[in-house]
Image (cartoon, rainbow, N blue to C red; front, side):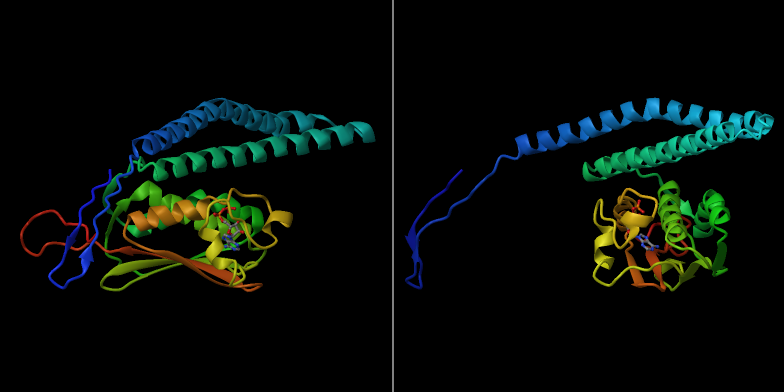
Length: 286
Ligand code: ADP
């Protein structure tokens, strides 16, 4: 729509007109909606068969390890090689299936976030519980690599207002990245607070990230350093999703790192303020 007019102002400056441009974005919004619906549908359709493929692969792996391999007592080199190959192959199916499940879940999360369709279950919660749950979920990873988990958590932490499962997802992502990129030493989770916010840091002594790569790790599908060549491949979506989750809570997330020395990923969350003496429920500070 173009609106035009002309006049001469009191200062004698010729006023030639006004142009108003109105762009119809109905069609663009419709395409966005269709794109998100398509991604959600495809992700759901992929997840269902994958869950059973992965479930049965894990079952076969368990049966082979517990009941079948121990029965095969032989000195025949050919048989021994076949047993080793079967064992390695099933391990690959399970680990690649797990990676594909993670990728599908993360693509689904990104689609929901971008469409503003992420469901948030906000409530008053303790960050200590979030950290405990994240450590329990990653305990097998620590055992596999022989790394020590360390907690340095202040005792007088105030509550926060947030989505517990989504915050656990963030801490699991930071801890599992720390384990993935660390070969020896410890992973420390540090939590402190001031009168406005809680800060959670996950500190590792791993490969580290160069200064120029640090801003890139929060971009979608970005994997930096040597991680593409010699590390188990990830999705490059964990950190962008974590950033969306933290920013939705009114916090921020960042990394400090030195190549070869380790990385510290930290995020803040606003603490929950209470309305003084009015007897009402606490209100979130965001
Ligand atoms: P993913 O780990 O699935 O690849 P993320 O978004 O969680 O995806 O991480 C993106 C990239 O950031 C990783 O591939 C890696 O290159 C780098 N990165 C993340 N955390 C660490 C860490 N603790 N130490 C070194 N590099 C890291």
